[in-house]
Amino acid sequence: MSSAAEWQLPLWQSLLPIGRTAPAGGYQRFAFTQADAQCRDWFINAAAERNLRADCDRNGNLWAWWIPPGTGSPAAIVMGSHLDSVPDGGAFDGPLGVVCAFAAIDRMLERGLAPARPVGMAAFVEEEGSRFGLACLGSRLLTGAVTPEAARALTDADGVDLAEAMRRAGLDPDGIGPDPELASRIAAYIELHIEQGSALAGIGAAVGVAESIWPHGRWRIDFVGRADHAGTTRLADRRDPMLPYAASVLAAREAAAELGGLATFGRVAAVPGASNAICSAVRAWLDARAPDEAILDEIVSRVMAAAVQSATGHGVTVSQHRESFTPLVDFDCDLRHRLVAALAGRGVAAPALPTGAGHDAGVLAAVMPTAMLFVRNPTGVSHSPAEHAEPEDCEAGVAALAIVLEELACR
Ligand code: GLV
Ligand code: MN
Ligand code: MN
Image (cartoon, rainbow, N blue to C red; front, side, top):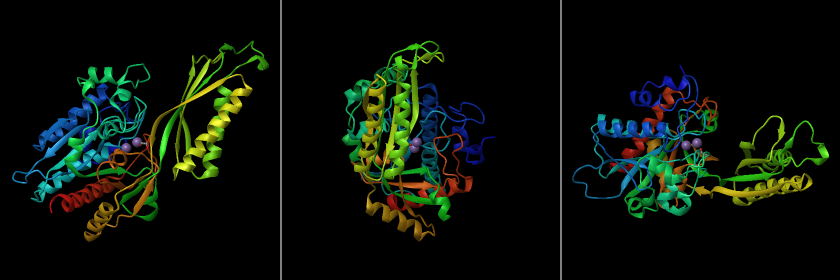
């Protein structure tokens, strides 16, 4: 039994098997794949079981609405997160927020509470950017942070573009793009998420609220050299792209340590990938994050400088392409204080935390008030099958979200 299976909530249990790569392993839930289709069906069923109207917006994001009769049409309070995963991801990053949103509605129903305004739930598409490279694709499309043309042209590792992937999933790629009408119907978006660090564990709190998100981005770096025989090519004659790649990895670590940011090469492809040949090219992805944009720029500049310097010495060319970027996000202060006060009023202390992790709530913050609740992660491990939250902390997340929903939607 994987530890994610400990939380007995039936809704959680029904989502757990989808996209799991092995009984004790991680998750492979990429946008517009079969696992994603099963997750989408799960969402639609969860909405139907609660008599919520489910729909899919023009960008493939899923929504479920509770529109109490006689409330007119004030803007809605929306909760949600995402159902896609990183490769071999954990069970909680994304799904915890969606499950807790449905469970918070259940709490309201059990207590006989009716909202005074519409309540929505959302599951955003391709939040991780694991298939098409651009993180928070669904929320970026909704807010206009990426153009439909640029999005349609994104390709996955097999060369399938977004437009084709959407068509195969039964969606219309011609309709994607900004949706100001939908955004204007939302008064606030609240995303509950597992903490991707161990700050809450350190201070003994089960839940927290997000204060800010570090600016961050992804850069694809292509090192192009020349393929040759590993057993016969003299060292002096080689144009080996692996060497400037290695220099870049070391530079990333050094720059991040010196400047107080984070820099990671977590994905790399050697082309063509023969163990007895010098490769012709190395394609690598740098993920960099920092407390401010100046530091972030400096980290990336130092990595690129090291790449170019080493490449020049080895007869290799280097080019870079920024695949994804999110500026600093400071979450809406008034909304955050309102959440903290409502929670404190019910005896829940929720400290405010900055984070280096990206979220749809950060993208949506450009067009509407947003806030985030974090649920304690005892080890802090995330983007890994070892990601974990204790069942009682998941329940504390549901309770906190229900308090927030009552505060924002019932008054
Ligand atoms: C998403 O989890 C990210 O921070 O990359
Ligand atoms: Mn994630
Ligand atoms: Mn997430």
